[in-house]
Image (cartoon, rainbow, N blue to C red):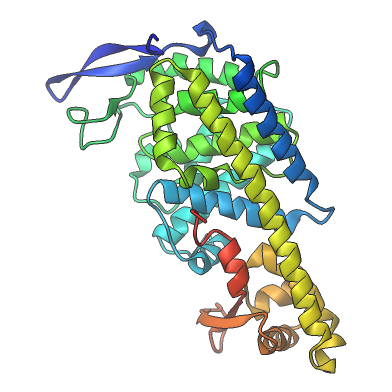
Length: 385
């Protein structure tokens, strides 16, 4: 087995190091045997089956699925925050404070941006990758000069410098050709879509075109490809499966670099399969939860049963997770006073609970936060679940 690339000598701060430059995808034999093809085909069928579980009013569930993907992708990189804080950061991107919650929220924003661009007809290009990176890095501690731009410095993976790194990534002067080659492959429509997502992600990881955030952008690329090639409304939360086997993920990427793309594609296909199953499970759990809420209201006090706003609020929960009187009032077109009364009724029957307050930006008391404890658990509070 020959490595899928070669080493070149580079000078880093007066020291010689060996950087790995991957072979161009256009020059590689990326054929799959029948066994690997069967695994990728099965993964695609699981994703299609999961897509069929989305009903016509899919937007709230889609948001929940994308949030699960964003939380898990951030978790893989060691970034985590309480889901309530993440949701609040999502809903107030202008004033949110830098920190883990903002970084996770930015991950979700980048994935959402990728899904929108996947539905468009334009091919993927490097400028779009840079746009994803700029969105992803919002609120991060990375220097501004590195945000949304291809690196012009030497990169590495692991360790504190290229001298003790796990992998020294390609020199900056090779990135143009490598990215052009990757974009050509990503935009093909004549290859197995699951294998295409696997190989594109692994190649991107080796190229490491940005100063930081490459793993997360690489998983955004997976979301784009699966959405595009499989004609999805929302991609499966593959990062949830990856987060459950980070060691297998890392080993698979090493195998790819060593020239064994088939074993990497097999592992990745199985992760996509698990992601599809996770999507179906999430949808089923949310629908069961909504039925239980409905029953709780029907069996509750008559004033709840006759309040249309109470039932309408239930459908908003998967999308927002955290509700305030302002959010609910805007969504339902009712006054904040009426919205607060609706939230308090849902809390009275145990569907919601108060969880602190936030500054409302208007005179008066801070706005009370209402959450569903059960939904928070489904939203990715535990990516390894």
